[in-house]
Image (cartoon, rainbow, N blue to C red; front, side, top):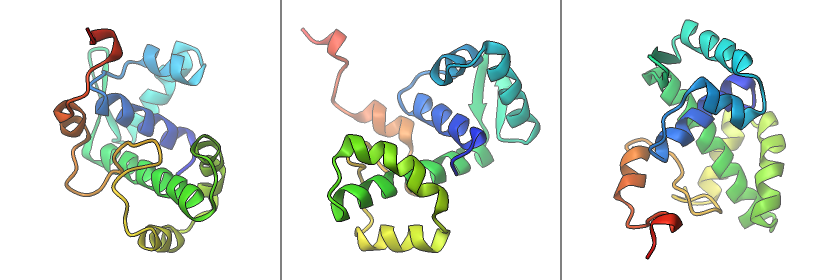
Length: 151
């Protein structure tokens, strides 16, 4: 799903997973674009029923969440394939996955996932979105704390 739409949905998913709120200004900073450009993109996402805007917050709809999770799952499975099967380092695999996943059909992605025995984590240790896994609950239930909060 490598597209502007996919990138924005996945960014909002990641923000949600880390209990941060998505705002046009936050998205503009993530993508290195102006706030006006980010706002215009968010407007198109809202028009297409993928997000709703509540005050300054941008929230994924069910349809937006489903597309974001599918994009994240595809990226994570691709990273695992590149690291586990092809032996790439995880940092290189992250960048290569962005290119590699563009040409994947759903059948090939499913075969890769099956070959990997449906891993539950990406090479970075983050959960791979699967049906029934709520990213916000996962991140909030972890026993980890931010380094800035460590004694």
